[in-house]
Image (cartoon, rainbow, N blue to C red; front, side, top):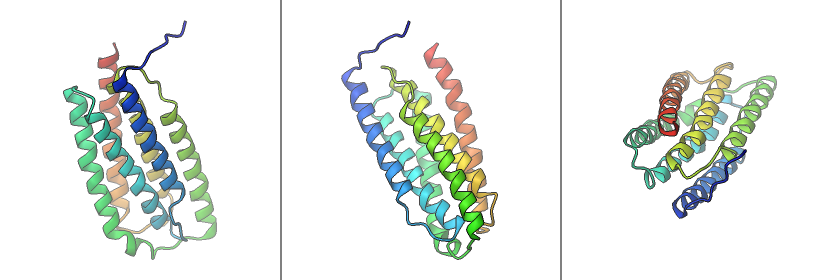
Length: 189
């Protein structure tokens, strides 16, 4: 038997803002100005992805008193703000590293697969009146998507300055997923 929830006003406000941020992220990632460089394309599509994570964290911080989640959200904000700054600082030099049409097509194909899954899982994440749990169920696929996008870019010739940023994203977001899964287990049992 499926349990029905009547959302509180706080949950409605939280979810309304979350879906607005999600829609803006999807639009900005899909409408980014691409060129013949995997490095450039990754950066201009990952920046709005990171910006959305920051906005989602700022959103949940208005509604949660859970100290562990507040720490996780604050860490995401600082880590992804730094990552955006790092990507912006190398964008011009990375745009000069071009790729073949074949590589670009393969890169774009996998990009679309990863983002389709991520957008779907974030948009259909289970929501109830436990806003902390809602956020975690939404952010885990967001992090998984970032990891998949980084792993995809690392298959191709990319700007040397970008590789350590990708490795850092994979490492920090893998740790973040682990932390969030543990916390979700604690707050939903």
